[in-house]
Image (tube, rainbow, N blue to C red; front, side, top):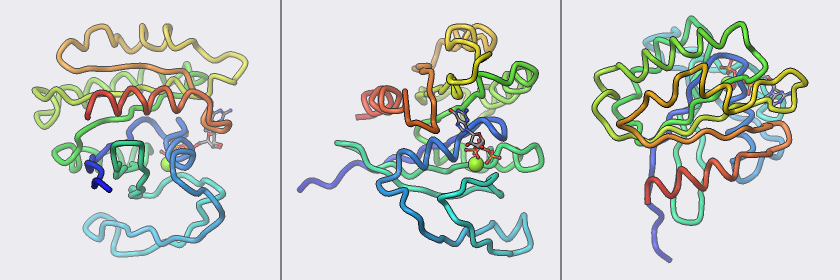
Length: 191
Ligand code: GTP
Ligand code: MG
């Protein structure tokens, strides 16, 4: 068989938006297992954490996950969205060949914070002049007062992104709805 093309994906977005839940749905087997989260020693004094991936907990630092599509082999950097870890994101921008940016569509109060983080990302020297594809998930579409993906894209001013291919999908990561459409789009951008 042909070896699949390897692609590094950065999964970014505020804490509690659903990044880890999305990545967990995309992984081949989300059966119960234990894994060791290596923590970058320069930031977190070299501790290691044992976490149960079946109960999703807030990500500490980041976690590296892998999943495959028909033509690609993705290595995902699932970054923590907590304020105190967001400064880790930029260290991985150079290696990233695609971005998944997750928004909690029910979190209207923090939509401006999500926009600020997105704008900071888009203006970063390691991202700014690259045609890197960005897949947005307007996640938690199941919440009663969730904003539509059109509304989310207006609030984040996505139409201003002219130099990068982007796409937004509404998703429910708990049920896995909307994820495949997004991943199919991402695969088409890369292959
Ligand atoms: P950090 O690691 O802290 O940055 O958060 P995260 O973006 O990885 O979020 P995580 O996947 O840990 O999900 C946060 C919470 O939102 C969990 O309780 C999830 O079960 C819940 N959640 C994720 N996706 C959805 C969704 O589509 N709908 C609903 N209702 N809840 C969701
Ligand atoms: Mg997480």
